[in-house]
Image (cartoon, rainbow, N blue to C red; front, side):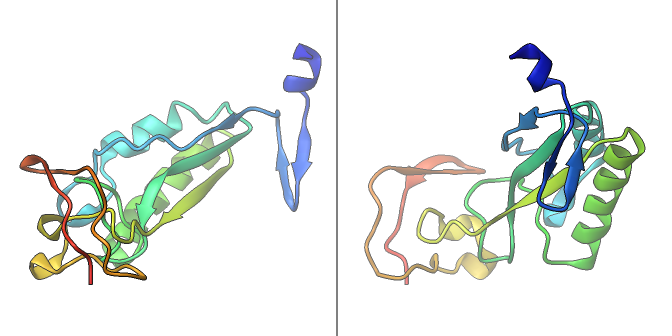
Amino acid sequence: MTKDLFSPVTLGSIALKNRIVMAPLTRNRAGEDAVPQPINVTYYEQRASAGLIVTEATPISSMAHGYPALPGIYTDAQVTGWKKVTDAVHAKGGKIVIQLWHVGRISHPSLLPNNALPVAPSAIKPAGKAFTYQGLVDYVEPR
């Protein structure tokens, strides 16, 4: 099996140098305004030897956040930050895809613009606690 693990494979239109896929791992290291930072570039660049990297959960809008310090993909500054990440991975011969993310009700007003209520398909408060900049707090009923 080791021989196969390190052999090239084509996944759709993407040719991979090996069959190793790095699963998404949320790092909570984005800067102000959810912009990827140099530490994000270094983190992914160091893992470019995997056949394919799947990025950490990446909010698709300001209302999609569910955890602190996640890098978004909905502003020009965020796209520029992710371009630095992808350029670094590609320079090392790696392939990278983004995990697009919206947490729905699994959020908290403190993580959303203007302390808005989370958006969800139904107004059912989740059990458990939200991980926020202030620590763990009860989830709220979404809108």
